[in-house]
Length: 143
Image 1 (tube, rainbow, N blue to C red):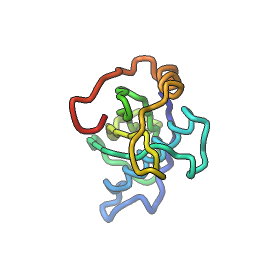
Image 2: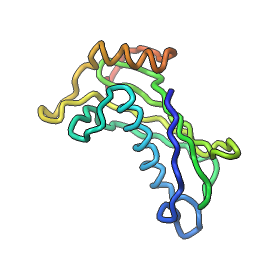
Image 3: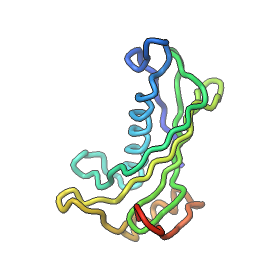
């Protein structure tokens, strides 16, 4: 599991004065890319070899200006060419649950325009970072 800090900015707010629902996608993206950089050691955007296939978010509590978040991300499911990341967003000072999310990312060859099997070396690194990851085969859809 990896936890990254997020500072709420004025531009993140909507007319009601709390973080707009669409901004959570940016928070999740920051966490997902930080997690991938931790796994691979790569931070250059040209070396990104995952693509987002699915996002699911459950909003639990509004967030306001002046609050700070922690986003915990871990891999919960590992398939042939994809993995499911579980993300928990909490308000840093109080520990209040803000949102829960799942992302499915696919190991992807951008030049060829297709998915690839996740290499064994990367699978091992995922297991090291998230020892409780479940390895499954997909009955259909994203594998």
